[in-house]
Amino acid sequence: MLMNYDTIDFKIIQNVAHITLNRPERVNSFDIKLGEELLDALNEIKKQNQIRAVVIKGTGKGFCGGGDVKEMYLAKDKSIYLRQLTKIIHKCVMALRDLEKPVIAGVNGAAYGAGLSFALACDIIIAVKGAKMNTAFIGIGLAPGCGTQFFTKIVGYQRACEYIMLSKTFDAEKAKEMGLVNDVVDEKNLDLAINEIVEKFKKLPPIAVGKAKMLINESLENDIATHLDLESVTAAYTAGTKDFKEGITAFVEKRKPVFIGK
Image (spheres, one colour):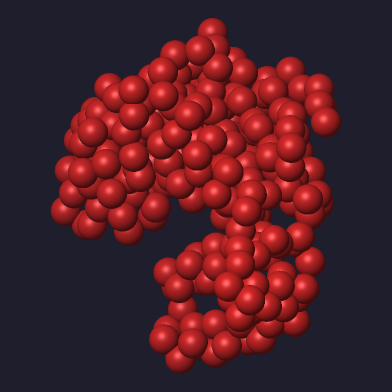
């Protein structure tokens, strides 16, 4: 399946959705149109139960340069434009987190500002060696428009202040040290590393995986009693699936399960 957009490439191959940000002349930075097209693609993915995983990358040497600064410069009312731009980026971030499918970001180069925030909204992040990252907003006189919560929860308060308020650039290796990315690989091995993860997800029960993602997200805000009850309700729900029946049958029969997503 192939859908036509101007600012992204979107295709579904063997039950895996592939989104490639495609504004290389702007380091794949967000403008309103890219945000709208990206959101549309994510909403389409949500409707298709057969999709087992989502892969997001950038065209060229960068992943995403954040918000398009040239568009900000040209905007007549910069406050209104930034409000519109951040709102559409936030919708994309929320769509990623609400999507009960694993999302793998292949950070193939620079991830700045909202581009870094967008990567952090994904579930697993593989970055190429030397990829540069920066929260970026402060460097152009702008308060962070998205991502401070993700960044702070991962690295802690003092480090968040250091890197966000000082607008410090760091590389993929430092990002891994701080827990911001899962793995760092040579550029030539990025697709291989992503595919290894995708193939694992294709063999796992997609409903259980999706609910696990939901529970992980809810655990960031819930008190323990509320969360334990949610886990109990969700476990009971997945116990009614054909995949659970297959899983326990395969366990008893000492064979590998074959999950169908039902």
